[in-house]
Image 1 (cartoon, rainbow, N blue to C red):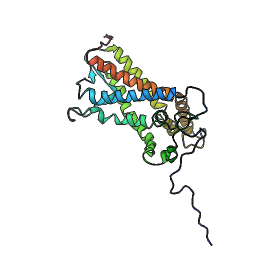
Image 2 (image 1 turned 90 degrees about the horizontal axis):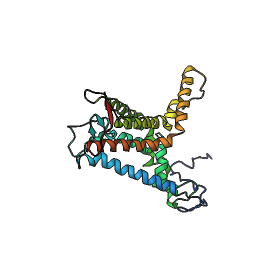
Image 3 (image 1 turned 45 degrees about the vertical axis):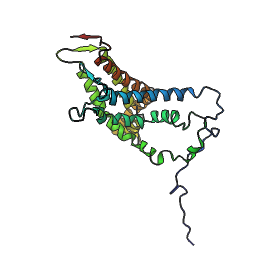
Length: 271
Ligand code: FES
């Protein structure tokens, strides 16, 4: 009689492994202050999300705060699209912000941060999580399977990044003079952080050096190896770059908003 073999995983939702921590949310043998890091990160992330949503969608349309002034354009709105076409109550940020939002949301560094801080999945290494997580299919099923779109968002991310650099150079020459102001310095600092964050991406590392059996066999693979080494070096500081670039975008936006509202002045040299 013929024996039919079936894979034990076919048709089943893979269960999340139990892990080594003691079962139950927050239960652990750790004696250090493990809760401080996920709590602080969660507060920081929530503060950024609230600020970004307010600035991009409410501050202008509802409270009338300009997002550009004297050649400076807020990074939340670059490239500036849809002005004069969209209704006044709809911020033009909606046409571009979905790219950096998708890029950050699916980023491995941010996934680690919000899985720990918001989903307690787990809250920290060797700390127990809710038993209900055993039914969690991880990133093999909807909705978290969408995290696999990260590579697509990586490619798209270079579009706003290109326009941000363009805007930063345009901001050096507002009108008839060259202007070197604190705002220019803030925009360039933000861009260096954003570029470092994008170029240190895990997916980019795989894109430039992945799926090769031999790094030294041909000139092409040797070139890819050299790119891979550079991205790998940068990748070692991906988490700090992710955090600092988030802060940099918020600071650049806040500076331009306050400048536009006349709350601060822009110290600058004009030639
Ligand atoms: Fe963080 Fe790609 S893994 S940007």
